[in-house]
Amino acid sequence: MTSAVKARPGRGQLGALLAAKAVSDIGYALDFVCLSVFVWERTRSALATGLVSVLLYAGAIVGGRLGHAFGDRWDRRTAMITADVLRLVVLGLLAVLPDGAQRWWLYPAVFAVGIGRSVFEGTLSAATPVLAGERAQLVNSVLAGLKGVAFLLGMGLSALVVPLVGFRGVFALDAATYALSAAVLLALRVRLREDDPGAVGTARVAAWPVVVAAGLVPLFALRALDAFGSSSQHVGIPILGGALSADGAERVAGLLWGGWAAGLLLGSFALRPLANRLIARAPGLVFCLSTVVMSLGFIGLFQADTWGLRIAAGVAAGIGDAFSEIAFKQAVQRLPDRERGSVFGLSQVVVNSGFMAGLVVTSAVLAPSRVAEWVLLLHGVPLLAALGVALLRRRAA
Image 1 (tube, rainbow, N blue to C red):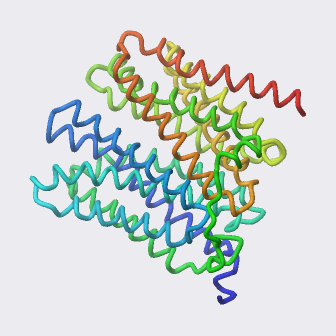
Image 2 (image 1 turned 60 degrees about the vertical axis):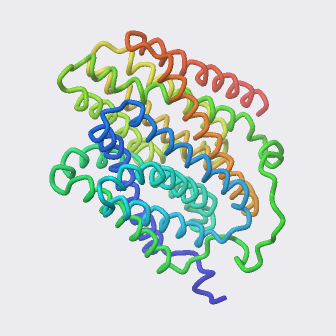
Image 3 (image 1 turned 180 degrees about the horizontal axis):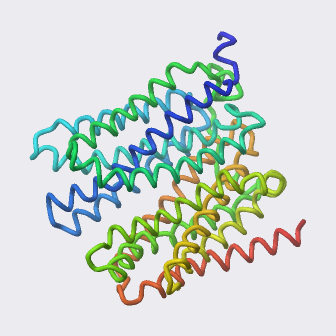
């Protein structure tokens, strides 16, 4: 193995990797919006449209299970490139298949996109301390910020790109973003695991015992509760948009999500230096407090009666979301490299299972006239749980 392969990337190489990740995230956000619209326009079926989200998160659960089973053993570069190539192929086919075949291929394609994203995200999170070294917290912050950028641009571009290139063009553009990401990973011969990839053992690391021994069970439980609760605003914001503007629900929803994305950017970049030491010293406590802020923000977004308060609540939710994501990664990244892959895979299973379960329950029981109360209930549970865990951690300290 050459020294180039073993080297930690410089700023330019790491920047290239993050830039490629940002481009593919924008493509994912664009597709996240356009796939549902595409199905609705082709079928006019709420069931068929809802199935898109269900399959996306079902695929993410399968991807998380793959990471849980093999993340401690597989070659991380190969896993990430395979995830990119999988998404490149299924979306490329979606762009060129005839109309009839395109309709039935869309559903396995969405499922495969969910698998690929989950494998890529979990593997990158496990590899970040190796890639970034002492800059790991900064890279975690950048990745959280890129999520906000992708959401903003994806939402905005969806209204502009479809009229210009059509849905097939959108799918082709997204496929191209994964081709770029895979090419960058192939070109950057950097180390993604602390040990020599050729020396990775075959014995599986059991993730749950590691999580229990590291005291991470409360954080995983909170992640599951928060994911379940977060389904409420994903269903509720379009309903709120329709209530506030009958003929412009999509613009209102975009504005509300834009406030959240702005908060994500603030928390990831502008405010991160203020919390650097606290996150490094007590990531579990920061995660709990950030979950409280995020839940309060989403509750406030539905309870507020003025636009200023709604946008402020959305920004607060985004700040809390950014800090909670950074702190959770920081807590898990303290584990030995040998164990991180399977644990991040398990976290993907936990989060996506919670979110999909919440979507199913919310879609089944939510009455539009009770959306504010439903959001209060579903976010109130993780809020109280997070406060309880934070108090216990403070007493233990």
